Image 1 (cartoon, rainbow, N blue to C red):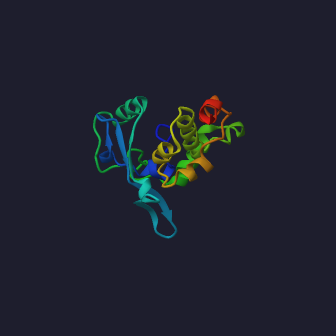
Image 2: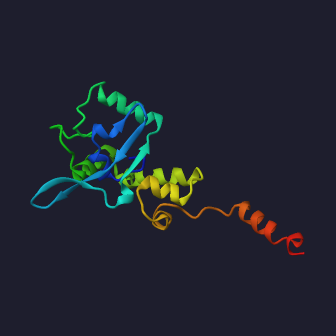
Image 3: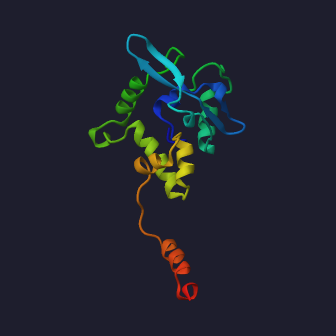
Length: 171
């Protein structure tokens, strides 16, 4: 989730057939949800914008190579449960809570991993559209409102306005 900023349900839905370790990409096409009295379902992403192919950082490719052990069943999840099926997002959230330990780290949730990925992209200077595409948002405004922070004033704005409205330009 931190490597590419996906939702927990999206990460849990990824099959090995959707990962190309040679190209360093992963296709996000689905999500895992729990439906009352039915169980776990693998369904399409929240919107068509959610269906996307993402590049993996090299450290994530290496991690997936190690976890695959050189052999995978293409029809199996990348992050399976103990029976090699899909993991329940709620159980995965609970496992994350147990792994993070004390109350001092109660703020660490799966959504924090997604938000951290968005913050890294924002701080690297990616546009709201680029971050929205990575996160699977149709509207960059949603990405800006929820995931991107208002940063300190930069000199770029003053230079642009100064150049456009200088005495030479006005004269």
